[in-house]
Length: 61
Image (cartoon, rainbow, N blue to C red; front, side, top):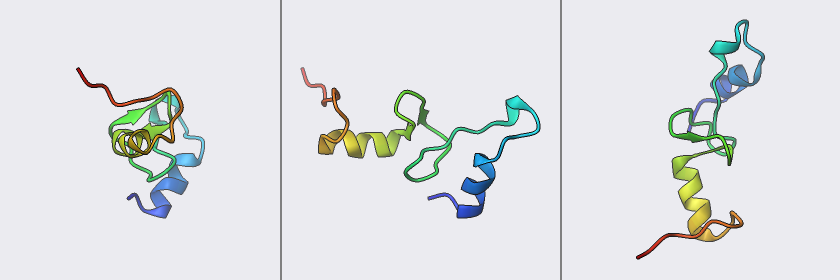
């Protein structure tokens, strides 16, 4: 879980566009971020397993 100050800093518009950091809206993690869902991989997996993300199901073969 990221610190509140780090999350607040990432929400501000950066001086240069390349400095923008996308973060998970649920936990604030910046690594393993999925743009389509605005989540990190860990939160995505938790929500997908609970069935809270429509159209996503666990694959099995």
